[in-house]
Image (cartoon, rainbow, N blue to C red):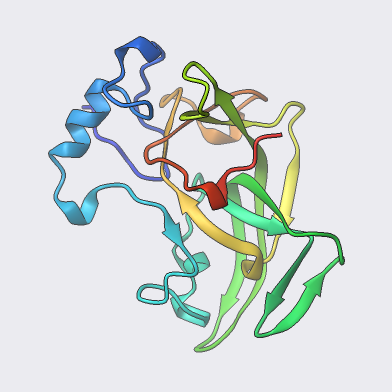
Length: 187
């Protein structure tokens, strides 16, 4: 069975020469092209007001263990009020381990615990189009609040048979969709 599950490990083809696009393997492309348009993987942005909002409508209410997310650190705004540590805003990536949140009709409180991930370029074409997200080496646990959540990214994990709790540094997967420039930080 070769189904692709958004936010969960799925089959991965390691041979980048076997790709139909710079982002996904041939079998992944075929599986994705046969999905109804409502099921085609996409990046879920908290800022998409047609889908997400505050409280029970917040993207954090849909997160599951194993989801790969983008969050911000540094300084950001909540309802027009500057919060954070005063440093410039920075984009980070993580795989959700557990969620301890409370949602009301208009707010969300709590913590998202995750494994830190890094965006690594596979610079075969010189344009950073072959992207890969990998668990940081050494392993690093991170915590952030729902107000720091920017997006959820569907990825195709390298090893579908492993529980994500047992991942080692350097293991990860390939985004199933191109990351827009505002979500790319390659250090």
